Length: 523
Image (cartoon, rainbow, N blue to C red):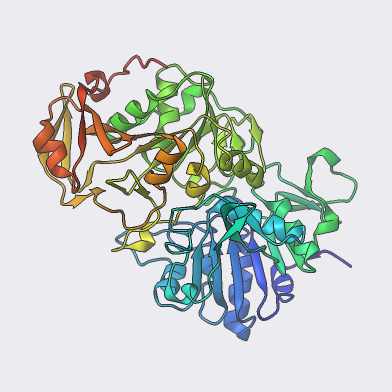
């Protein structure tokens, strides 16, 4: 059978009620041409109907113009299982998938990204599901929300607590996709896939195995098609025996924001001088203080937000290469990129399949994680996954729950409250107007990270803000450092919506952090 078909021919093979798994991470590896064709087929034919869509990591950009939003149509999509979701800015209409979730037009679950990959691997091997501690005491736990994002999802629980060998675990069922939609750079006529212009492989192999072993089909979107016998076998990441249909899309982007950058795919190494330094502002002050928590030789996970600038701090301070960055999408080493390119790294040392990277994270094999927060509560728990007022502005938890489950050390970073007007002057932090929204609260709106569980496991947890540094202690949050120029009672304790403890040896943060010139960072 000829494998190279049009996108329209490929999606014609997807039947009503199919379970469709999509390998993507925001704009990275998004099989946009196939998803667009699927949405267009539904618009013209009213079919297929009643699909379940599986996204270990979000497919599409934050504006809802790509990826999953192509298929976010009532009747086409009835269930969605996602590690993360496209998020939208507060001043724009929510992405279409968020509108469906909020309107109860689709049953939606937010399951940790690594666990979704694990569920697919269990389906591929025809095993009964995943037993894990990841997600316990968080919103994923059935004793809280079970990962359900709306009432439609709560009617069909996705996870349960079970006793196994005298211990309590979370059990997630195996996933058996009828269709896997994946993406690569090149396919030969037999469907062998290479990823030479991609910034990751994500879970392409695992997803293809799951669909094939469960009797489904695998659709691969590629940029180009090569003749048989022209690929080096070591370069093939997904063999053609697992691929049914190849869709050629010559104009596919490397990422949502990138036509093609050879440094993302490791085909070229950029000079360090080509990476822009972070602009001097409040965020840079926080990132500098976060960087002081690092030690030479560490493997360090990094997340989206303020901490994503820490690699640029190390470049500016002459410490690049002294820690190795590891990202959930799979890059190891190099320089993690920002904004719409987040999840990619320039000059990477290796690309690891995302499911393997998550196994590394879930067991706490790395040294430290740098992550953001939306809220912190009195127990030290953190919310990154839901804002009650504007949920579409958050992307869900992604790999956050996998990463924090057993991490030895975690440094959370963010602004102390929301909406404050501040400036930096002569090594001091000046607050001109206080923020109206507290981010240090009695209880977080959603538990993405459990402070209580962290204390029980002996995890080392630090919270860095522009005003102060806090540590997680046995009795809750303790302020250990304060920014120069601030009054402890007025500017810190009174601005938290829950009481904070103060260390008896409270220190003042280094003034150099608050000045524009390099700080001479010790590492």
